[in-house]
Image (cartoon, rainbow, N blue to C red):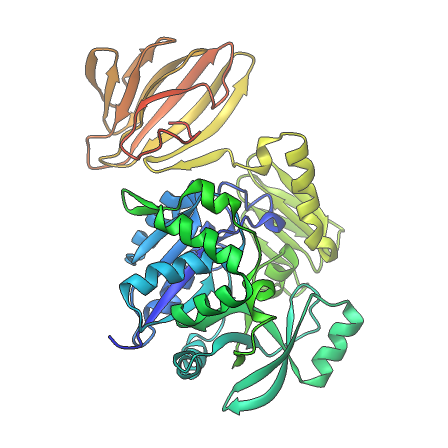
Length: 478
């Protein structure tokens, strides 16, 4: 289809400001923060109904590849491709390799680039803005989308509009970084500024031309990484050496602030990047005291607070302007007005080598997930759920033995040269050092309790011998 729209979903964010709900291994785009769909599912649905739109292309990091594939499949959206970044290099290189992939598929199409983790209010308004921007993209412009500010936000970048070039589309006078509150007030009252939504539209050829003009070194590394890419199941893996050597920069700094071909299309709807707990509080339904609550929560004399419970009862008394987020392994208590600083907590956790910065007690894998239930000296207990037809890797451990008790479904267990079926209320023992694997041959979810015992129970005590998901080179357990 001539001049069709190929959406590009960028799913590389870590969402550290929404810790402890968002973690490096399971960031905010994969979490249900509002409604029944995750943020990436909402983004994919938003673009699936666009006129002239093709299947989306997704760029994500290696660690999240199965999450992306599974969550899109859950909403019956099947991507054109999923490109895996071997290292974080910000948005400009990610968009470049996406442009190269799309150029091979359809040189005459238009790219619509969107973050995976933003929320938009009026989908019809969004579609209308895309329709207006499409004509300018076909004409060789680099279109960005601006949100008319509803408040003097200091957590967003701004775009100052120039003269109108068509209805709802303006020349770009300048980009502005996140302002101080007084400056943000001035921007709001002037009526001349947009919030920078991080959404872009252009042809792949136009983008690569401007990258060659302003970032030739970046383009060269991206081209090498793309040309040396290889297929891995349903994924395209970029060449690690070339991509790691590529300069890291955002599309705003690398291209949009330098080009003379940029325009901004007005997007007149509610929007948020859900970049902090404060931002989430503002969009959640609140009670009469302006509290947003979720889960098992009891309040007495509490106001202007966001309180989320995932596992346990949370009771609050006589507090105001707080964020309280409870998960199974961590609790955050913060001044709501300092919600942007949660990333400092994450940095401290990483400096201390704490797993809570990276993973939840529930860890997702392509075969299902496991959840740590309890642990002590020389033992830990996990709940493991394996999807129908899925299989854990063939592996062995140097320091731990494992006892598996099936509580639901049927397990096909490979233990050394043995192959046995273990059904509900039955168990089997895997001695230290024995090669083993586990498969769900049934039609329902397999649930089992795993009791590990040994001198070292870290998840890096694994020697993977065979894996149907191609994870041999990954430091992923199970």
